[in-house]
Length: 159
View 1 (cartoon, rainbow, N blue to C red):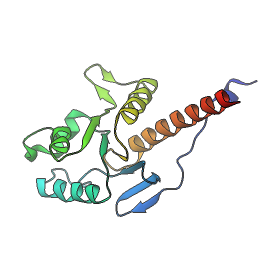
View 2 (cartoon, rainbow, N blue to C red):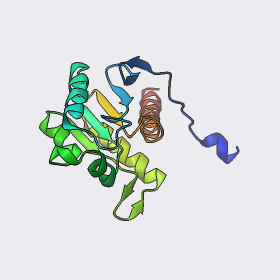
View 3 (spheres, rainbow, N blue to C red):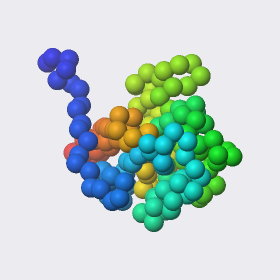
């Protein structure tokens, strides 16, 4: 068997859109743009309006795929890191950045960090990066791969 045929390939299913939130698994997993996407410096009121929409959709948790530098650059007027702002607003939140103090995080390590964050957080979970595209899509695929692997393991155990 060729090496490539052993790989699990999962594409992100067509998302159902609710406002700027795109559901991948209704009631469990979605992605979106960051609050104030398109603005270089985002006012606190913009973040608050975004969080109200997230709250109305009954999200309990957020996974943020922005670096610390990005968060500080986009949200300097919050008076605290974006993750802490989310937590103070009543959400569970985790930062899973593609870069850390040691440089760029490897894809396998990033995948494991996303999967661990998703497992630990109450559902539903909203994932966001800057535009809700590359990093968020990577995170969505990581979660779907984890769920597919767990499903296969469960099905194999029941046989």
